[in-house]
Image (cartoon, rainbow, N blue to C red):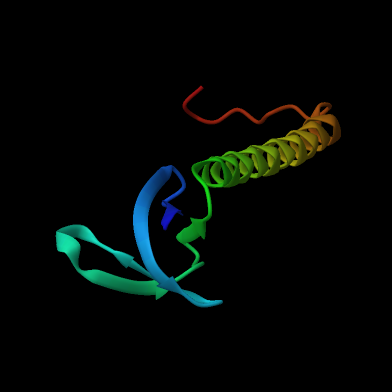
Length: 97
């Protein structure tokens, strides 16, 4: 049976799977050798269909974008506070000015 592996955040690879358990999968690797590995790690995940693999990667990247947008909003809020609290201060001149 064919299964699909996502890894490194952008890759979808198709493999012929020869056996699997709840936590491991054995597939035919390059050169026709059997390879056994965990179904899910921090850098790869196995999926039943290419569509599931695609949706997994897409949703992962959407979550990353949302987290970054949230971080940008927090940093902008902090910057606004800094500016508001210090707007009345004159920036001291240095000897080089």
